[in-house]
Image (cartoon, rainbow, N blue to C red; front, side, top):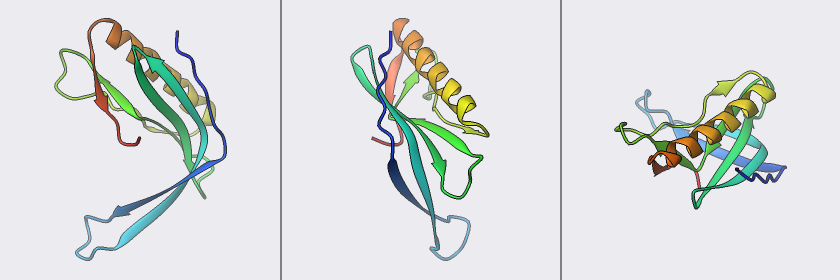
Length: 116
């Protein structure tokens, strides 16, 4: 069983360098954190959250602080993706956390995610 807790009303600002241009122009994207969950899976604290870019009401993304890796894979199965509804993003997040636990049940590994 995975216990989840969330904290609403969090904001995040992401700044990324545009690697395609010759200058070092920066793009800034501000995300609102809609929900943040904490799950304890096999002793690993996994933070998961649903975010949406400000100004894009129809885009929802989920992220996790840790990824899982099957013992037969060379790279981790990264969470995420862009969804056009909140319910769809939340459903995929819960599915990802369920897969995370299942893979660790059969001997998978944990890999650090993109945010802490």
